[in-house]
Image 1 (cartoon, rainbow, N blue to C red):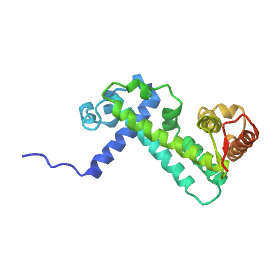
Image 2: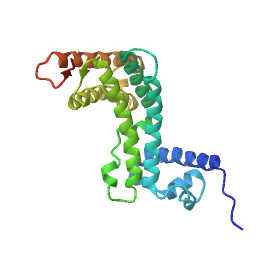
Image 3: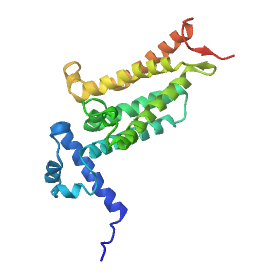
Image 4: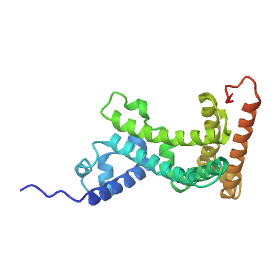
Length: 228
């Protein structure tokens, strides 16, 4: 007699536990140090049971990454949907990004800091489709910020793709530098209360972005095009 399929909620709950403990092992042992056997021991189950949920370590890793970008994207979308001018929305999005990085240090490091496999490493492998899903989710986050930066430029101003990317990278570097410095405890050696710097850094990043936008409007050689 065939076994009765378990409720989807139960399956999802087990997957969540595996993802959570898998992240903890990636943080402790690195990508090469994680094995399904170690993960099974941590969970108190046989390694073969994990294979009922994930084909291998790479699928587990990509699932953790995808879930991380989904969570960060949801936070930033909620911030982007708050009422207010583009500058206010961008500030709220930056705050959502930084808060995620501080509240989820291991997940953030897996997504943005540690030298783990990236999409290109999976091209031509059985995991390419899963890697593509992860990449597309991450790029949605990038596009959300790019769209809001374009809105900040003001009506009648179209930023070139190159300029938008530059502005995004400049702003992200400030957010990421703060999160990475805080999570690595390096900021503790530079400031006695690094958490107190968050709002000031967010405001400075926005002011820097606005100054760069103003400079782009003034430069005659810029690719910014004013629409009649």
